Length: 630
Image (cartoon, rainbow, N blue to C red; front, top):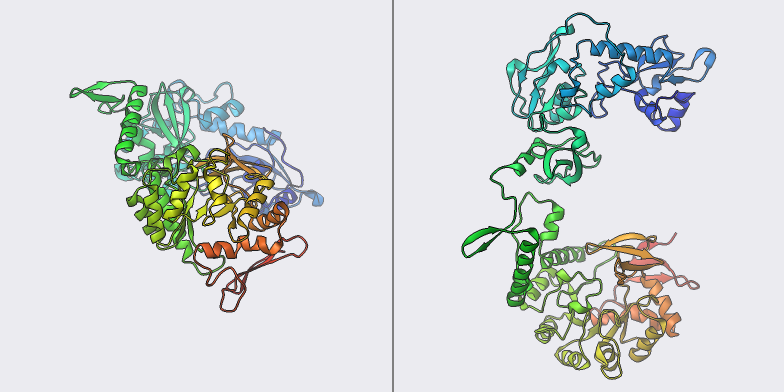
């Protein structure tokens, strides 16, 4: 829109924090539209085109170039009147119309065949400020064709309006001054030094910033109009910068790639390898449809047939060899997101385990006392919010890699004891001093009993992700309540488990056999909204975290809230609830000699609760206060 900019412009600019900006930028912040050709927000000020003229009331009685004048240079008007900047006054319109007429004197009338048609700034502004006819009757100048390489076309340099954006880009962004302006007046030309080529790896950006059709893309030349192209957002496949791209497509064929502005990554620039490499997609030697080899011959098939063939083949391999023996060859040109999706889930879990082990070695602030590996030896029928791709059958080789990645910090591992090879895995964990826990399991009562004999000692979030209690088949929950060797974790949030079921566990197991757990995910302590868990979309409403399917996906419970809830739900004394959150888990993971009790020679890890609300007031780790509630 073209409007008068705000009166008392200097005061408006100061309030908006624009004192160090140009009038052009400040006018646009105020809602006024200012045309320009030579100005670019990423380049230095040149002031060549004079299209951005505005009227400054109180200043000299002539239009001022808004790109070259700063807000701090404004002075009060006559008799101390507030400063005022006009962007559409009669003086401004007349000045801009004069500039436009001057620019069009030598510009060729070839818009119908110009590659810039439809995205040309000169074409757009000529509609608003150009005349219906030209008063210029002399011959137009003609600029010789220049060849600067295979990427940038300088065939129509007669269209150039000498804004010098391309020159400044080379100097200030690319770091190589490959283009410059030679001669003066109507003989001035943009050219390279003594006929050299433009070789910068960022040279294609000169095409984008050229406001007219002087610099165009040679590969794209005369292949499509901008309004014929559909647009798809993408990411640079050629390096780790993650430059944002827009891929422009016509009839399912990539025609052009241009930058997508992202201030935090690539601003508005991309490398030539990202801009022009799309030509390989359209090469004659590229495989364009899937093929299957049958009887020694390659046969073209549709995508549905090809994908079904791959899925069936992988499923057969998984049954015969195990999921941990399936790998993938991926291109180094893939994005980080594609590589993450292609990566074996076990590898991702190992990376997370290594990261947790590194955190456990830290000695400042809250301490990681161990790693609880919930998987991957689970029953996929009771996966809960666990991604099924990360679930595999018990495998000694995989177990060895997990424990190795943990570097001695793995304290607990959840396993489904009904899976083939699970009992041997429980024994292996017990021999390594790792607490084997039953969870995400459809085991019957007897399966759990066999695992208890092998060394099973814990139940992962009792009731959730397991076969429930039934009078004919007690299942995992029945075994958890009956077997004295088993301690029970419980999520006491009133969402995962009904308060009455929480009370049942507390009465059956007591404080020495009940472990309070939060199962908290990243939304804990944050407002309701949309979050992510293991690559899955999680919606938190009313403190309940669920996948889009409605399955519970972790909790937003804090440990102090768990203690309060246990006192309320089970009707037990406070000191028993605190034991469930401190001394009992410390004993189970083998840290009872220094954690869980306030006695001489024990670590001074102390949480002070408010006597009335039972909310955390202060947290001390090794005697140092690491948290104080304000």
